[in-house]
Length: 264
Image (cartoon, rainbow, N blue to C red; front, side, top):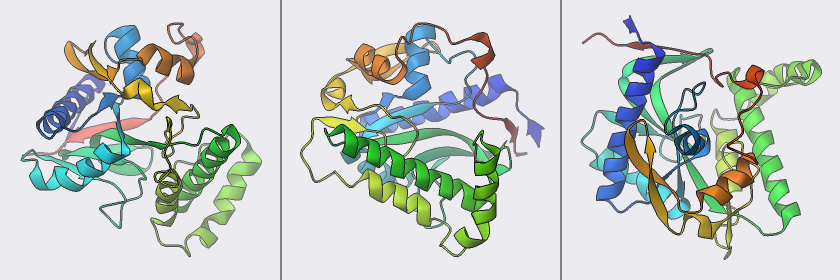
């Protein structure tokens, strides 16, 4: 296999993104650049210089249609995976993979991919909202701990507690905690709400649904993709003063990845 440079990894991510966007446009599925990808588009017109992935977001209705139809209808070489459609999947959110590649993130073997996050109805009550975020964080930690990787805690005592819990956690089905994350995320979907939240990843921002009522195109790596029309309000909620660069010591990638292109 041929090792890929970081620029080659990003080029493949953009190719995956373009196919996902094409599919969404053809099937009237609403998407937007999310998290650091949205921030990168607004502040840098592309990747944050020290970032190494692409994230997009969808509301639940669009997300459910996307995950249940992409593999069946898309004629591309890319494959979508998430716990709702694959009983063996460990992720509570969707990933779209280029299966002609192999990617190692620490000790996890995957393929080069992009992340697709779902935004569900959120309670207006801040205590209820924080409780949902707390449960998400616990289930995500337990999920990572069960698989023996991805447990990133600075407190060494907590780290060894999680490590000691693995034999007990292995009594549960492999995707049990990922499903609990999804169950928690969907818990308010039948309630009418003017608010949404990301209950499968890490964000603790309570966001107004009206932020994504309309979408606008912005530049990202010399292409144009959707962001919420109220992206300024969104980014301030998530990052505060988002145009200010973080301290230099924090300008590092979130992931430790190595990727390869498979031989033809």
